Image (cartoon, rainbow, N blue to C red; front, side):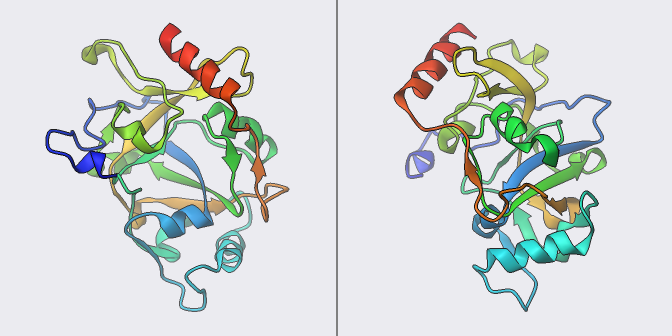
Length: 220
């Protein structure tokens, strides 16, 4: 993080403005209770739940509305959602519990963490939020990243890299970087994923993975 504070370094989320499809009613993010606990600016507002009691927080969220219904994130957390770079990563494609592992790999994620959650932001709320095309500064904490090289006027969004077939990597979902988002703009649901208590490693962190990603980035 010290590198990001150096003079002359651009802030995260400062890429060209992104444009979701007019058909998209929401942007989605696959995350977890533990990630929400570690996000910058969010605080659990449930007095009965300890700061690190992920299981109770998950049960509260999942029990508030039967899956797959949604609840306001502000029912459980207050503040703004963002990581240490004051951004978060989103896509137009909704995760489904029946195919959540494929979705995660298609989103360039190597693991589904314990107590997974799905977040969504309504399109109507995006006017109050910075929505940008991801760039290399944004990817400082997210190394599985595909730079967009088109002229700025032709860019609409970034792309995830699907990890479902390491011998044939490809672009998959549209990808957006959002600035800090007030919890009042976010909806949440608990995932009914079979391994929700433990999570699961999906793509091992091996030299062959990074070799494939390096060659794919050069070709794209």
